[in-house]
Amino acid sequence: MSTALTTVPAHIAARIAARQQAGTKSAVTTAIVGEGSGGGIPRISIKAGRYRLVEDGVETTVGITLDTIVIGANPRVSKVFYGQAYDAAAENVRPSCFSNDGMKPDALVESPVNAACATCPNNQLGSKILPSGAKSKMCADQRHLAVVAAADPTKVYSLTVPVSGMKSMREYFKDLDNYGMIPEEVITQLGFDDQASYPKITFKQNGFVSEKAAARIDTLAHSDESKIATRQMAPSNNLLAAPEAKAAPRPAVDDDYEEESPAPVAASKPAKPEVAPVKASSELASKLDSLFDE
Image 1 (cartoon, rainbow, N blue to C red):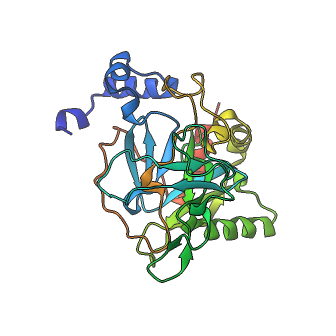
Image 2: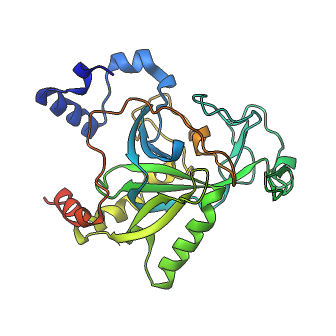
């Protein structure tokens, strides 16, 4: 990207902020870029071991940690199967088959491998053997979460937790429950296991939601945006900027990591001219308070 585009004048920055706040898009951009831009629900990517906020096909790289508030989760384990070999350089690779409810292939799957997930040969333990010799499955388990960035809890993002991070996620939520806490009331810091050779998500409690933010978080937790992010509801034109979106988007290839899979290296896309979310826990309380001042 040229310097002329990255050095944004104040009046243009104000217009950008106003459009982002209103959720509007340029008719020209929509007409030219269209569906290929990756439009759909905002999501968090873990590509190349970095947390990235992805919206309308544009990635904003945050870093190796991201402070979030988890506001929703699909109650069922989802499934995803790729019939082709993983290619770190490939863009917009779609799975051959997937299931958001873990019971049957999604209606968007053109050629389902099997009518039901329970009897699918790719969903059987041992259908894939890891480099260590351990048994795994060709069709990988994953969980869809709805989260908001703790520094700006106004927009819901979808986070796909691969099978490699599901144990850490369960242990983290159990620990919270043991202390009578719920994810909607705490700051959850997403990180990566530095002992793993691939992006393996970790979860850590890193503060609490402020009193001013709590009511707004409760509202978001019961919103349609949360259900869409967790793949329990199809997007609608009223909720998303991309008018062509008719059903929950298919999972992206960069979020599909298996135990002992190699970590891919891929170049990130140009970031929007905006400040990345604040990650330091000491700054979160004041940041959250200021966001909800009337």
